[in-house]
Length: 260
Image 1: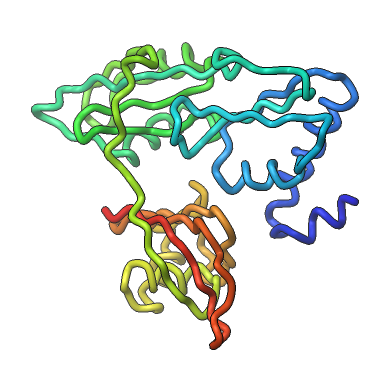
Image 2: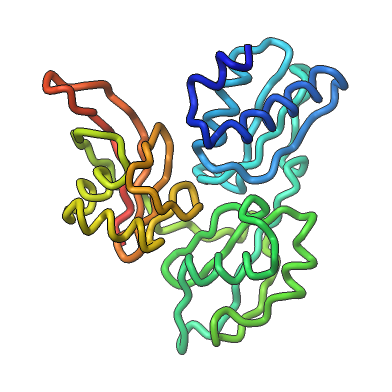
């Protein structure tokens, strides 16, 4: 059965699939819920696919707001209905002198990770153009807040916020339909951002590109459904639908694109 599951996904996703299997067994054997760390859309898709239409187990997700990208999953027996507080997520705002300094997603994320905590402890980082907020696993909030008083050279203060004080994120995906010869990352980056394949390859090999928030240096890496690709200086895109092949044997895709 496990081999059948593996064949639907990439080899690099096998450790995560094994983790999902352990979660499922824990819920089935002990009848207790499992709360995951924050998952990216691709990971959540894998989790959803494996649990499938099981009548014994239910899957719930929450990332802090309705259209969140990164979500914690709550895997539980079918009779259990989690509340919002069961997801153990806190919202924080980065207070900084906005008249004299600017913030960015990359600067904030880099500072959060510099505390030694892994990416999966943090949810989305959101902004309305001036204010910045982020979601965090409540088990590490006190430690992270105690560690951070600067982002770059800018003095900051991290303040907890209620969900009613959440800003409305400014970012929204532009939907783009594209047809490409291959699902390789260098082909997609070249096509989406209208740059040469050679330049796309150089950017990947130089560490300027991430897949699902992890640096990717292989130009031949094959992308799949719901992968998110961040390209430094250009923006990011997500493969939202794989619509099949054209008559000329090219992939027809629906992409969400955030242009920088």
